[in-house]
Amino acid sequence: QQQVKQSPQSLIVQKGGIPIINCAYENTAFDYFPWYQQFPGKGPALLIAIRPDVSEKKEGRFTISFNKSAKQFSLHIMDSQPGDSATYFCAAASRQLTFGSGTQLTVLP
Amino acid sequence: NAGVTQTPKFQVLKTGQSMTLQCAQDMNHEYMSWYRQDPGMGLRLIHYSVGAGITDQGEVPNGYNVSRSTTEDFPLRLLSAAPSQTSVYFCASSYHSANTGELFFGEGSRLTVL
Image (cartoon, rainbow over all chains, first blue to last red; front, side, top):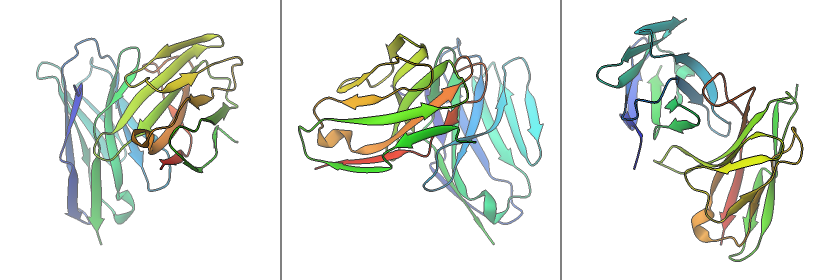
């Protein structure tokens, strides 16, 4: 049973577009919601994270929106660039980190 | 700055063989974990450790064994390899626990079981 559901599975946007990746969770014990970015042949790396006491967090071009009542959170990438092409994973943690299934993002030049 | 180091990067095994994937971190992290990554399934937790001498099972522990004799090392043992264990394995560490900060990942070990 997948505790963190992520969509879409893949996403293609033009340079400058705003890709949005969505995640939903069921376990209300989760108290930490990070996003990881993974390039081919590399391990995932932390991109941005949020706690459930805030509804939005921005770091550069990356924004997390968090809806506690709906148990959903999303990643927005402003002014996307070809270098943002990667696989993105949402995750949720209480004692352990549970990952979504991943979204492969392609940003076309 | 080494961070999290995994060896080997690639390995091919025959069904029934055993092997150990090595993981070492030089950041003095208490928390270490092993994940496997399969297409369309994200990363799934195999085993984790919150400190030397303490290990516990994750979501998919069957067929794997771990130990944590030092803070730095957290090896993953495949007892009798099966084709279903073909995957990319990632070791990750954090200063204290999975929900208090960044999880640092190694570059992965790609395992094929024939």
